[in-house]
Amino acid sequence: MKALNFYSTVYQANLLAAEKRCTIRLGDKRDKYREGDLVWVTYGNRFEPRQKLFTAVIDRVVVKQLGELTAEELQAEDANLKHPEELARFLERIYNRPVTADETVSAIFFSRVLE
Image 1 (tube, rainbow, N blue to C red):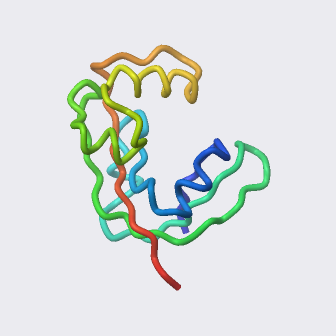
Image 2 (spheres, rainbow, N blue to C red):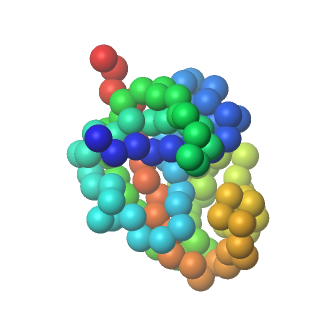
């Protein structure tokens, strides 16, 4: 099974409260995540143990340039995001490199599966 992993423990509460329903990743992820796929939503650092939070279904994958993201897409990632530039600064910290508005991103929308 595939996983959508989140590095920061800050997201754990948001994920469990269903406040976070989208993740925006650099690059075109349509081949990796497809509508209807079941995934584990996990958090933890790379090459370290990860905690499974829940199973989710991929609802939609939207691919576009970072600067073209809508308010809905930004706020599904983080309710505090208002502008694509704010997301670019955040992604720079995650990916440890400069991120510009013309980069391709994937907005991956997901819903928790109740088991």
